[in-house]
Length: 237
Image (tube, rainbow, N blue to C red; front, side, top):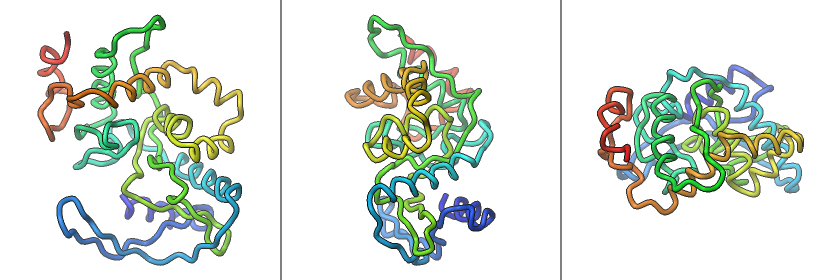
């Protein structure tokens, strides 16, 4: 993913944030990967300035749009990273956005209904945008030329817009501070009360305590259309 984001940044020139150029990648073990990157001269800035620069980086990421037919998260071979998931990794590799949408709604149907009914999650009509899923201050910086810096490509992916908004509005205090530079208060309030947002919050709560976050599916499988149809009998009460 770093190579892909780096190429996009190079194509946009000074309008893009700095993205470290990947030089070499090697594995010490399946769970430990080292990445050698170009050094970018970074300067210390007040927190308020870092938040503002991070917002410009996020805006640039959100300007990159992709098809819902691509693998969910733009990761064809690996489960995506996102704080919504238990252990911050998707339990399955989803072949496309539609497959992810179906899995989210399987989780949603497992939730004991509250007084306010939860709407089915809908992703397939949304735009897919690049998202820094780990909205921690250490994943952003300010270069000596004043441009923003984007770090940690492992947590960057392409997600439906409502999940990208969830990332900004419902994950970390730093993300919420960045969101104030992207949405006005009225827009934030509308997004926080949208049906998709409410359902995503409920799914996240469900995933924090459930024992089997694959919900009966086989580990490591691709959750595509055909496999989903074969699982309906198992997964539906």
